[in-house]
Length: 360
Image (tube, rainbow, N blue to C red; front, side, top):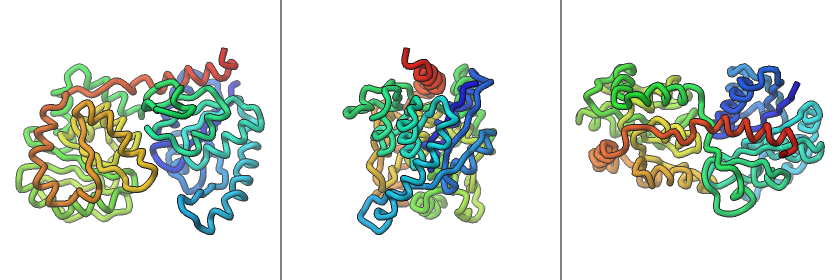
């Protein structure tokens, strides 16, 4: 029985690709034992058990981006996390990491125990954990081309997608026009009117929500329908004809298919899902981090299927002034989605098998 340890937590950008690969590995290797390692604070604490996988917790290592007292504590937290990971690694034949807080201790523990390592980097600009892990293995994969560093030589595998997104793509491929019209109707919207889908990730975005709250009356009066993913912790505005506000949108695949225009952050998972099912997107990169969100969206811009706008420029007046232009760009964009990431999970399973057999 092969024992595989999955490391990747914190945000959906780390957790969702890991789950997609885990499902594919389980489908091809049903006798294997799959264990996830994560932290109690990360999104994995909810998503991994819900997907039916075993989850073990380690101490979260917080690395401050600026000088702060937390930097003094970080080395001790890292040592504890590595020790906890070593205990898990002794029961693993392979570790696969997807970046985030839990991956760095897992990579160090795997190096200490000589456990084979596989890495997947979802972002166009690699994070610290995966850059560290790449020092210990040649079995690496990326979702976007990377210009420099060890990961620039990695397998260009794409981004492993959720099952519902893959299923929706395959179902829509027969007739994209009909699929998009049917998706709009299924969500309770008029298929003859344009639909705008806005969301800021699983927790929502206060900045994006504030703009839509102020602009929605004018937009709806102009015949534009709005599907708004507010985030689980944000209150929904008052009811309005043509507007739907939801704390959580379970059927993201249908929302992508239905939307004439997507407005969202440009995390790696979001960009891949929009590329697979979406028509046109306005991406508002998160203004913190290392700039990876803007890089993630550039390939869609080059395909004339997206536009990038700074958060500081995204205002109600800007949206009102440019909405017709954005919808016109959507109409000119390809109606079909892209299959570039459809087989990414299978490619990752093949890389894992290669690593298990010593790279031979």
